[in-house]
Length: 253
Image (cartoon, rainbow, N blue to C red; front, side, top):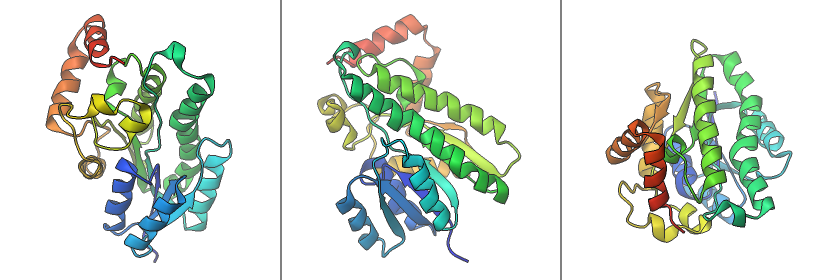
């Protein structure tokens, strides 16, 4: 039998690349989805073909259909790591309307559509699952990342609800909520200096390894890193007006 297939989106760098590498060394074939063809080709070579690249712009309306069709050609996904995401740092009134639409498409619309397409095969097999990469920031509002933060809060709520619906099916869903991570996200979002040296900063490899452990243990929500868990739990217990003031002081442009 062919090794099980994992689909990883946003696989060309950061957390997605780390998931792709780790899964390829843990007995999975990996369908790695991203826009940067050169990065995907490098992953294919470095993993001796255990990673299979699929160049795709996930902002396109048919992206979920394209990814799901390729997964079925490879035998159907046993695991989806929904990691692709985008954010732009700055006041909402300065955010370009197309950028806002792209963030919502990439962070919300695409993963929901892809999960809808991949889930029936997992349910029919009564095994497999989903790791949806959201954010520690999904637990509270994030001024100057209003659209991004809103999409991550949606993913957290959506995945928790889905995990409850999937009880007893053999399929598990995990909302993985990383804190600060040393990846390209900060630079692309325009907040690299804010993340440099942030408390609880983790590497993509650490986040991916923690996510796989949590998923295998049947966790529904997991914040990687002890300090990040303490900080997130503390923020969740504070009155929301206090939380807003704290986060607003941190996320200053």
